Length: 631
Image 1 (cartoon, rainbow, N blue to C red):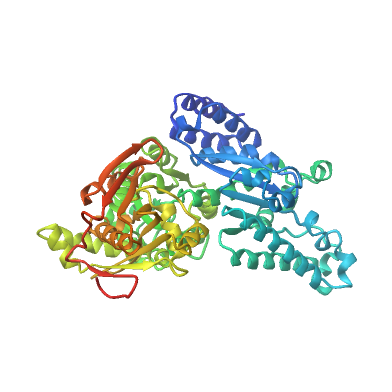
Image 2: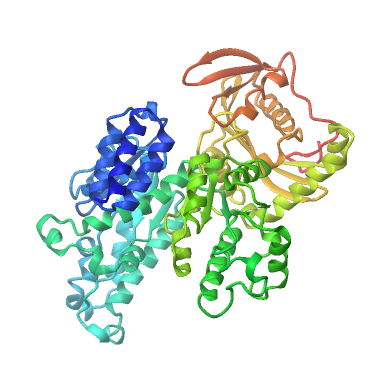
């Protein structure tokens, strides 16, 4: 191990010992960068397990691993990578080859472990040999019946599991065989073996789309990206039915972690970029707008590819921001004059262009966009700037871009920091929504009072039932909202769908429109009737509309819901977190009385509806979910 690797080890252990979780994560990331290999992941796991998860502030997530091959060797990498994402991954490992029995037996250890996520790691050669070793044997008879049988079998597993559990399912697709019996003639002999495996994967995709909470892990894509010969260990496959090489296990664990991050609200929301030698080659202040390296010829083509990847992130709903040490005039000229510039000023939610520290720019961006630093990714080519940000803003994820610009796209996307499990209408127009917010803030600054601002904003609040059109966005809000949320409970689409179809539950999404445009669905209320009490399970609101009295409309609507259900009290909880300070006084300032304080359930507040209720603000137009008329 290098001196840098040894130094990272010592720093990691020291930070763990002192309970400095964020700094320990930084050191662990440096360790696996300086000295990659499964041995480092094992070292991290053992070190972390010597310290209590409570002391480290890790969030527990229960994962069950079911497989048709030996997958136990992935535990170290999965648990260690969980730590890098502030997660305590608790693993239930089913017995070897026992996945069918575990799924079909309601009394199995799988269901007793109450997993939140189940990984169904299926291996094509063992599970469906007709598409692999038995391909030539079955070629003359055709594969239609065999494919239909395979589809029915997978459907039975998924259906059987769903009758017992609402956990999220991650199911592997199937990698094609690297050595095909017909060789180069594979696509000329009826249904070739490659097309046969592709047909299996198409059927699996169709099944996963038909069930909420089931996601296909692109195992075939992983094997292709790494290379089949590097991925597989043929000796261990024959010896212990463990076909995955040890060097590939951390890569597979990283793929699982993309889903775990999304399910626990740890998907990053914003990427902050440098300019010189990041979005283009060269220093614009020295070479001018037309002298920077950006265009169809290398290295300019590599910078264009990186801009294209960044633009795609924006289209997915990731916020873009700039933190550059530059003269603003030079930067504006480059964006305006260079014909090869794919990114435009309007793509960025905020720009910090000055000669101050990058860490101060990141803090300013976080304040402007009202997001936590932990939801930001900073990408820069300069090791000095990266280290300065790591030191001053340790919760920011820092990507030091490689020396070769053609590797920038991989560096930005490889870890899947921006990956989510849903995509909503609001995601596609996020940049536009932040521009609307900026316009509203400018009008607020010119208003004489808050009441005047709110009246002039011409806000309309639409209270709509949660249905198929809003399900993805509602689940996404529960997973991503950290500030104005009373309980910070995270739910999948499957969870929300179940609540929406249960008459005991009241499920409402909040859409806000104003004079600057449609803000989309920005709030969620999930409440459950318990006798004479309507109990608010989740109450959350996007930071984009905090301070506009929308929360008062939401509570007034809950009073209406309680009355319609003949409930006499409205009950809510505040479970404090490090980030939900803005919501702490929600119930107190609306007349609720605090009845209990509990370490696990937080503060419990109640409103006696026979004595009082929350009234709708006079200056807000409210559209009810029942008849569409303004209340």
